[in-house]
Length: 261
Image (cartoon, rainbow, N blue to C red; front, side):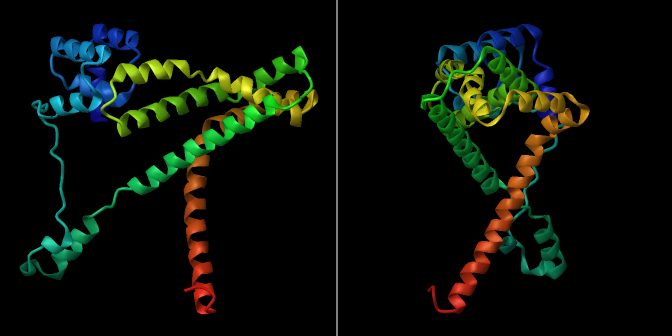
C-alpha cells in the first residue's frame, strides 16, 4: 500500500517521461518516487534512461532519503538464541511465534519453474512450425487467433515477459536499465500467437475451435480466464508440497528395506 501511494505521488510530467523511456517496473517507479522532489526525480530518470545509473545504484542513493512522517519503521525480531535467559519460557515462546520465515525459496523455485515452462512452450511450438505440417486455411487461422485472444494468451505472455525481465534486472543489477529496455522491446507477446497457431490447428477442428470460443466468451469461461493464473499458482504450490512429501515417503521405505543408504 505504501509503495502504491508513493507511485501515485509521482507528478504527471515525470510519469510521461517514464512512459517515453519505457520504464514501467513498479520497483523502479518506487525508487524514482523516493528521489524526493520533482527535479530530483527528473535527474534520476534521465540518468537511468542514459545508462549512467543502474537500478541498484538508484536504490542505494534513495535508501537514505528522509522517510515520510508517519511511516512505520521496519520491525526486526531477534533470533531465539539472542533472548536473555532471564526472560523465561513465555518470552521465548512469544518470540518464536513471532518469527516468520519468508517464502523466498518457494518464490525462487516458482520463478525457475515458470521460466522452464516458458522455454518448453516455445520449443514445442517452434518444433511444430518447423515440422512438415499442412497449410492452415485463412478461416481456421483467424478462428485460432480469435480463440487465443479471448483466452488472453498475448496479455499473459506480455506479463510473463515483464516479470522475466524484472527478475533478470534484479539478478544482474550492474547491467544498465536502458539495455534491459532495449532487449525487452524485441520480445513481443504476439510472437507466441504465431508459434501456438500450428499446435491448435493440429489438435482441434474448426468446430472444436468455435465451441471453445463460445465457452470462453461465456461468463464461466471469462471466470476461468481471470482465475486460471491464481489456480495454476496455488496448484503448483500444492503439487510441490505433495511431491516432496511422497518423495520423502519413498526414500524412507527404500532405506528401511536396505535398498538405499
